[in-house]
Length: 366
Picture 1 (cartoon, helix red, strand yellow):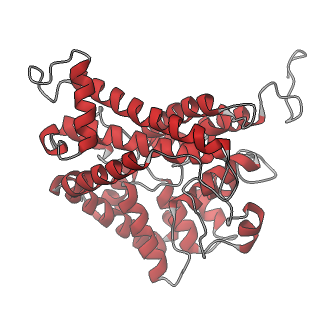
Picture 2 (cartoon, rainbow, N blue to C red; picture 1 turned 180 degrees about the vertical axis):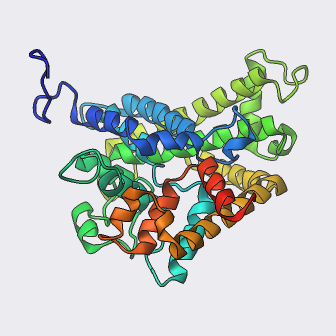
């Protein structure tokens, strides 16, 4: 080590604790793998579509913006904490989106593991057990507030399968921090906006269909009022879709700011202060129903996800039968944890393309 170099301890680090958490998350292997994990469209579908990585970045930007605007002398919010929670909130997701997680859950429960698989808790385990960056302990050595926010951001989060020690430490009967609640809403805003954008771009859904939603009609009017002619531009036009997404996100963010400022004035830990006005909540539910029926259940999406489901099932069966196919690190974990959990952790860590590649090596092309 050079004479002018020195190691920073947690006490003399120039960063704030939550900024340090954020940096450790960004530099983790699990964060990099999000680049090749499905949001809605498989990674192989094209370079344009969102992945878990771009989704997490979009959530963090929205969460930081909301936190900065809602922070006040009475309720001081930390943008770095919101950003850290947002960047880590999807680390526990499997390849192939929710279908992959549901399939792993089924595999584990079939083997008698009642706690199965749940992506929020898996994100927590990634941060506290599965990432290995220090010689004497597991995890990324993050603050309590960041870990609590990742575990509980989808509130309420009272799960019967959680170890009692975790339930006691994180007091799952109580709501998480305001920053964690903000991340939950930012997550909702981001995935609706980019799923519409990706869905339109892919041709799986159209604005004509989405006009069944009064919320979409309002946003289209905003686009038109700014001088963008909805009739002369094709709905697949990138600029038109960008203007729609921008107005959509702004509309929801400003609703959160207006509603939540009033709620935070009389905030207590038994209430949920972060949310939209009631009318908008109703409009969002109706829009989600349209997306669920018309896009998420589109035959092209269902076919790809079915293939992903078979890949997860096949890999689980193969690795349970022949654990020597596991990487050396996971083989070493077999001495500390059950084989079922080690296999599930390994599959959950995979990107879409790696899972398909390994499946094809083991079984032939899917």
